[in-house]
Amino acid sequence: MISLKNIYKSYGKGETMRKVLTDFSLDIVPGDFISIRGRSGCGKSTLLYILGCLETFDSGEYLYKGEDVSKMSEKQLARMRGREIGFVFQSFFLIPSLTCYENIEIPMMYAGIPPKQRGEKIGSLLSEIGMSDYANQKAATLSGGQQQRVAVARALSCDPGIILADEPTGNLDEASGEEVISLFERINRDFGTAVLLVTHDPAIAARAKTQRTL
Ligand SMILES: Nc1ncnc2c1ncn2[C@@H]1O[C@H](COP(=O)(O)OP(=O)(O)O)[C@@H](O)[C@H]1O
Ligand SMILES: [Mg+2]
Image (cartoon, rainbow, N blue to C red; front, side, top):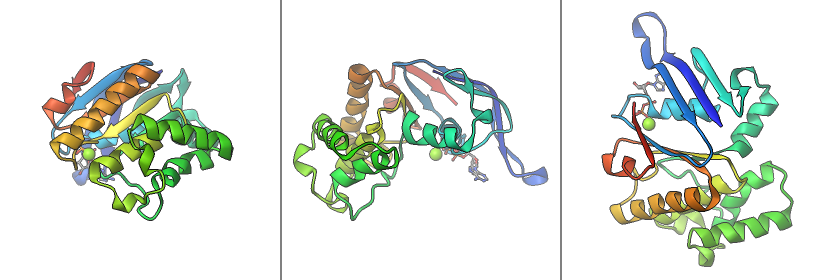
């Protein structure tokens, strides 16, 4: 599904140049659950931004379903970001003044999915994350763990092939973190969605089926 070959990425130029990724390769197939562990500053977020088509790279090759991502048009890239790939961030990034339902609905509206279909999907996602009773509650009033579960539902709303999760338990207590990791395990098992999770936490990394370090 995804093939990264010999990726190099640096920031800055000359004296201030910082090499972040050096000859990094990775293959992801449908159904994978991969963790990538590394200390702070080693390039984990940069790697996810590259995979999510939010950041470019200096050299190497990124193929998505056999297509060269660096040759995609803006329209194709927008589709990748909107529908093919789901993002979950450390700090949730929900819109606090909107309800759980509305937060999950946003990517589906951008993707042009009709209201009835949106409603059905949101209902099943709320049930999947154990928050059916919270549909109309504003995101600002939820606990961190609940917010992250809504963020996972939002990432799943357009049925992506893969979820990219950047330190998804980094802002959570142990119990809430556990709920989020179990949710990823369930999604991976039941829907076959590939999950790529980056973390500095060895215990979280160990939950993946395949473990890498960066
Ligand atoms: N936009 C940027 N401009 C310059 N340097 C950056 C930028 N983004 C990240 N970096 C640097 O690249 C390195 C890797 O950052 P990052 O991918 O965020 O690491 P991690 O997520 O593993 O903590 C860090 O040294 C960081 O300071
Ligand atoms: Mg990071």
